[in-house]
Length: 434
Ligand code: CTP
Image (cartoon, rainbow, N blue to C red):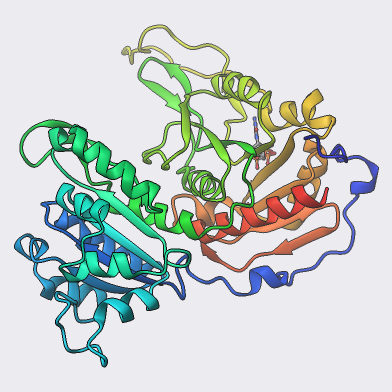
């Protein structure tokens, strides 16, 4: 669906009154899982050691975590560890008399916003498929109000067990009955074999839980994001780059995916893992980034340019390493200008006809308001996000200012993940308005 109004950055876009007060939706910046009560169920498997980290991540994201463990889980990790990390006594048995009416399964399942089973063993999947209820964890899975309390499961088992027809059949049944399987990882297993069946890593499970609660405001949209620095070669061993870590662009990719978008991330050289569910294209130079972006932009609805693209590249790349020869003059480098990827895409037919909404970033060292307002007009884009580059490169938090046809809006300093979430909400609102 085309957006009715083209965004050309022409006359009506002249900056007008500014505001430095964040709009209402930015006033409070809760953690991703603030106010959520998660029942974290552990079943028997070596992956229980990862549940300790998951518990920590959940509480750090603002969730209240109630751990429930099966007898088999206690063979792999102690309830003491999980109690210390969750800050709450662990439930182990349906006969636990702490519940005032002695019905722990009812109380625990009614309080929860989600039940998360991590790890979920093959045996436990079989129990869920059958609707068994002879121990606390399966009992409370069965007793949960189906329409209100989602059941998210992170399976973990040996690769043969994962592929076994009975596991495949049981999992299909459990999903048909309303549970969400988060899938498994692939790699080395505790038994020494390699293949599918490892439990997802704790940050991946955390992302899935956050995504589960995120409104799908970008469903059906294709987002294209550039991130990180570019690397402009001088010779086969040297080059010119910059201090961009890619963290902001990767956080945006992750937040967009959680909001339901299909995301392609074109990244310069960074040391970051690919966000879950995101398609990644690695490039080195600005020219490579341009080629990849041009190809992808044709089928995208939104383009967000967070990359710190090198403005210039050496005019010539030496084919062999430039040697330091005694008596020879120090080499001098000549530069040529790199293509402006954002300006190129913003000037494309697709963007000018309103089919592609372009968002730029401005990394300034000073005079942010003046430079970023001018940059938005120069690049011909409806929205530009400004920040002070040296204050944020490599950091986990940032301070952003949004620039559009109406002026500018400062967002409070926050983590890059929080800012990315708010930016996605902002872009979704603009897409639905325009
Ligand atoms: N950008 C781009 N291609 C370039 C340079 C920049 O796509 N060759 C994009 C960036 O990804 C960012 C925006 O343009 O979204 C602004 O980048 P920035 O480095 O802040 O500005 P420049 O255009 O390079 O201008 P200057 O260096 O003069 O500030």
